[in-house]
Image (tube, rainbow, N blue to C red; front, side, top):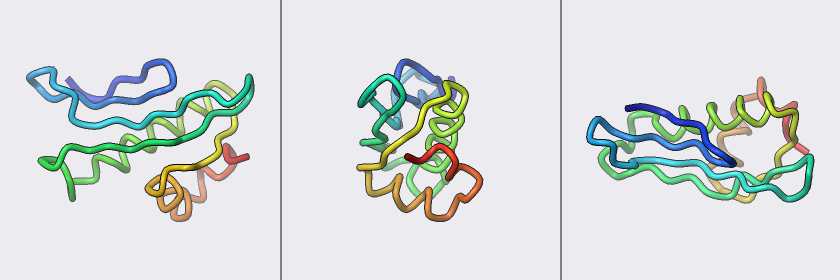
Length: 90
């Protein structure tokens, strides 16, 4: 099924429609979200899925014209090595 963007989250569903990964970014206020959680099923670890989900979340946040704060340790690490998305950080 693939990566699906929803309200304040990006999820990955496998071919059996089982959720195997997600990044959540609930709102803090009207202009800001908190990237607070990243999950990838152990069957997908080491395959770059967390990075794909984080990039999809960053694109969605940018598209919505919002800024992000980071409380997820993976998000902090990911943004440190992806300068092209630093413009969305608050």
